[in-house]
Amino acid sequence: MKLRYINPDAPRVKPPEYPGRSYEATVPATLDLAERAALAVNALTEPTDPDFDHELYWIADLLATTPAMYHTADDTVQAKFIQSLPLVRTMCGSTQNLDIERALLQTMLRMQGDDGLMYIPIRGRPWALPAEPSVWAGLDYLPKGDHWCPLHMTGRLLGALCIYALKEPHGPWRDAAHRLVEGFRRVTIIEDDIAYLILNCTEPGKRVEKPAKKPVGWRAGMAAWVAQGLAQCHRALGNETAGDLAQRMMRYVMRDSGCFREDGEFGPEFPDIEKSKPKLIHFHMHTNQILAALEVAQATGDKELLDRALRAYSYAVNCGQPLVGFFPEWISSIGGSWGTPHNQSEICTVADMIACAVKLSLLGHDKWDDVDRWVRNQFAECQLTDTGWLTDGHLEKVNRTKLPLPAASAGIPKYGTTERVIERCVGSFAGWPAANDWVEGNLYSIMHCCTGNATRALYYVWENILAFDEGRLRVNLLLNRASKWADLDSHIPFAGKVELKLKRALELEIRLPEWVESKQARSMVNGRPRKLTFAGWYANVGRVRKGDSVVLTFPLPERTDIVNIEKQRFTLIRRGNDVVHIDPPGKNGPLYQRGYFRAGETLWKQTTRYVPEQEIPWS
Image 1 (cartoon, rainbow, N blue to C red):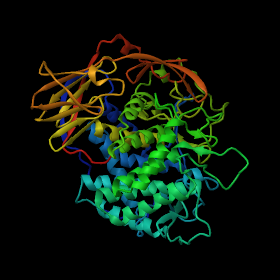
Image 2: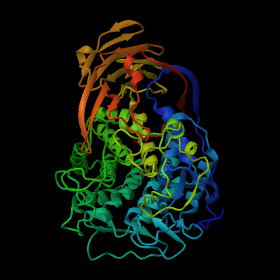
Image 3: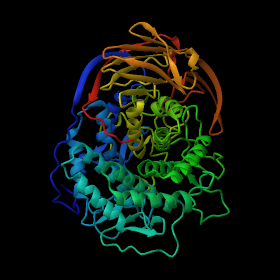
Image 4: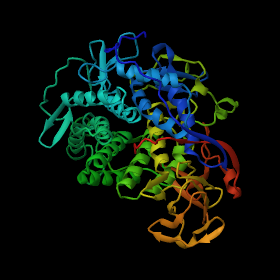
């Protein structure tokens, strides 16, 4: 242990366990989120530095002549990884790098101070702080001591503690979570029916004093990260203080901070400066706030927050391209107009929108078609599953000695590695993709905040493909999925067909996608026709028994759409919701190379399916 932690004598951590059952199966060669989760385990554990307790390299530059990964002050986003890792392991059962997971958990406990907050060592890490404060990294000021706490990312660590508390009830996690809630309470200003943070970072012993003016814009909105963890702690562990704080924080963010207008329109990040210039609006900052509001509404039943989140979600959808799930990194002026030169997406934002759509659906506002479109397209295409385009000689590499490194949020990174960078990043998600390209222009390839956000969204979607309650199984999404109730095989987009192999007797309902009319759907149970009844989008198959085989078929249309994405014109060919061709094609990792789906005949693959003993109730 090179680094000096604030709590070096923290309790020893046991190796994490993921019990479950694995078996071989032949399945359609279509999108399988469990397979994507196995790749995500690689991405969450390999791009780390063994010389510094497996600290994350936040930036990966895959386009450079010599691919490299770098440390910056933004390595704090590893908090997202610690929350996502147990989720994706639950999806796939991967045991890759369990020793690294254990080390990260040990480090998390060593970072918890006497006041309950999580403190990162400064000394011995020359990249720990930028030369001057950086709001993008959560640094309102530069700490002077040996440790600092990024409050926003510590909110994600609270969520991680809750997950491990659910997995290991007798471990140290529950106590650590409750102590962290108390730490947040002590640095929060509470007034009437609201609460807010005066700073987005702190250090041991720093006094909290009520400011003359409440924070607005970016500085106010960062509290959403904390509120998200607090709401999760209330829902998972029953901490009422956490629920009350979360509710007050998000009431201020959504209603009073200037982050949103009453109709849901996004407000500027810095409303009190440069008033005569176009306002700078960061999409992920706002979608994270929407997601936090939904977390609170889910945990507390706050209808006002749900209504505000729904209006803001609708605004966000209209600022993107909802057929593919492209959402921009920036909006340069109020009103939703896309600016230049920014023309890339950010997978943090895409993942947020997917998570919001899942939560809205669970809260009674059916957005499953949004989830289906976005997961199948921009989201799935922007996970690094194939590295051939990086190594086959066709990519024009970037000479960073001639083309300067683009600045990360904490400056030009210089502490890094070139060791096995490409293979260590497999399973990661693109940081700055275009509509048709894995990397837009000459930007870095990966900012791992996106990997952390996207891997959590993977679980949200996977968990809700199927939903079992009181003897009834509802299929919400027609994606491949193994479970203790049934195995689902999806032929989409080869053909309009899904098959379920039942593992227990139950009532079965299957949601049709938006492009299928109820009268077009046909079902067979063990090869015999079964009449369907309908409630909204759900086809009721009725009672089925253990061992039954259910097949649902429907037409699968192929359509051509002309769309504008970031002021550029694209032609899309879609089968169902899946984009199978885009024109013009990309250059740096072209997206939608899916012509094989258009033959209309299912291709098959061998896979190892995994069913966990216990799923984590997290979405």
